[in-house]
Structure formats: structure tokens, C-alpha cells
Length: 157
Image (cartoon, rainbow, N blue to C red; front, side, top):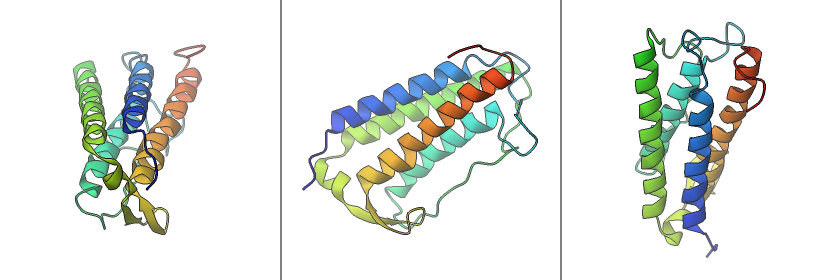
């Protein structure tokens, strides 16, 4: 059995989400749909994609052959600031759900091997959570930092 530290995984999940939300809250009004180039995801698209990724993860643990999802430009268009704040509230809520899901798993469940098409083989549920969801969010968190700089909204995060 692999020795998993479930508490640390849950803590990492929370820290990454807090950091993503910190960046998304720096998006000035009117920039919610800003994108670095036409085919890139906007700030709102990235937030929406992270919500979708959390929901996918929760479903993947129930439906093991669930196909992967892809982020996409134009997935959501924010019409006003209230809609953007509601989107961030959803992202915060799915982050709490993800951490709760992790807290409820035991070492045996985390070590269970299931197929994931992204990796072309069976991987542990721990791997799907860590690499397939949390590390995936870390990638987008970095993207958000670059976007904030490119949009001229910050000098440093």
C-alpha cells in the first residue's frame, strides 16, 4: 500500500484554490471576458473550466470510464460584474467540495487503479486527483498570473 497523507492533499487542494481565487479577484470590472488572443480562454472561461474540472473529478470517481474534458475559449460570457462574482462563488464552493471529497477518501480508495484516457492507462485515484486536477489547476493559476500582467492589471502577483 502506498503511504498517502490525505490531510496534506486536502490542504494543498485548499491552498491552490485560494491562490486561484486571489488572482481571479484581481480581474478588474470590464476585463472578465478579456483573453490574450482570440482562441485563448478568458478569465471567466478559466474560472468556468476549473469548476467543470472539479465536477468532472467528482463524477470520475463514480463513473470510472468517464471521458476527459477540455477547456475552451468562449465557454462562458460574463455580462456583468454580479455574474462574475457568482462564478467565483461557484469556484469557491467546488473547491470546498473537492477538499471534502479528498478528506472522505481513505488510503485504500486513493490507491485504487482506474483507467484514465489522459494517461492511456490505469492510474491511482490519488494520481487523478493530484496530477489530473490539482496540478491542472496550478497550470491555470500560472496562466492567470500571466494574463493579469498582459492585461496590465498587475505588476506582480
